[in-house]
Length: 205
Image (cartoon, rainbow, N blue to C red; front, side, top):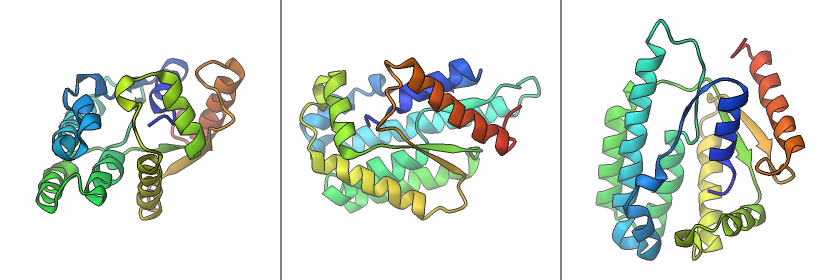
């Protein structure tokens, strides 16, 4: 959260002419409740995101299977981050008990073979201090009481699942000095990095 996933996904979609698949966090009625009482609502909130992302990936798979489809597809959050960062954090913190975590993982494992594999994951490498500043700046009321230690845990778990999956093609981009929301030069620099990598790896024309 706060690293700029949604912003850069929209930017890539608009400038590189890719189809955008957004995360519908606003439809998750459990999310505000989760931030008020994490232990009570963690499983509900994380399962909502898991099912939402599953439906998105199945739809992406169908799109990729269409012969008329020629555009790239960009998604703002990979399902691996939902599972191994956000949901796992709730297990580590005790907000999801073992039975809930095992059920959550069973749902994920039962569907994962049907998911298309991304050609590239862009990792927005952002410091904890910068993330806190961005969260405060965007003014979502339910995020106001998020403890820094929770953000630190998410950061650690994200880096762990990346490290444990060396076969994933990942492009890390340091974003602390990039104000992609407000600064045109930052947006241009970001797009140059992404476009250059895609062309180098022959992932796009």
